[in-house]
Length: 308
Image: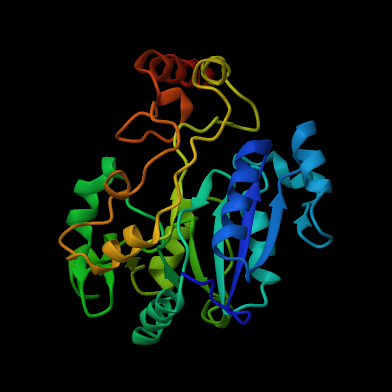
């Protein structure tokens, strides 16, 4: 597939903190599959020397640093940085990524046409999910979503006057934003994903899920909580390793087959994506401390003790 000239329609914001190898992988995937998109990295005052050195190699204007006080919240400066990315966006669409995500395939004009169609069909739609679905959550997705072959999405079947509509999927931190609609509605990023979900439910329609997604979360990622690592997390770094469990980019025939499939075959990540490392656990787990049961147990015990 030839790279599409985006003409300023899409820009990408990546949010990073102290995971240099993961950030490099995410950036490389954007540069490979969305080469025309404006790219900016919003770093949360990382102190990892390798990451700092990498950021210094990037072109002027690519890296945005928050003020030193923003990192004290539970999620560090993530949500203030998301607000900065939104406030300074210049394109029609803003793709929000984090350093542990990867763009897994090329996009062609049909992809951008599909995105335009989703938003034009519903003037009250402001967010579009562009990630594959996690296999571990398949039951939930089957309960809350239904295939819409006309629009090329999976969406909430309930209407606003039905009880299930209140539980609709409305927002992910990793998603595609319609900048103009959000600004017109005076959207303000809240300081947790849950609070952003509640705000999105109050302001907009349900968030559709693109039937042919192009982003996913890299598995078995090092975990930080309150900008520190637990004993379990430090052990996981030694046992699981710190190299990203990268996905093999989808081939053109694989992408064509995905787009042509019957939508009764849901876009579950494990059905479409393969990691470069064949030892990666399947179904995927997304925190390295969950790679082994005993690490997960140790992590759980540590958090219980910290809350006492």
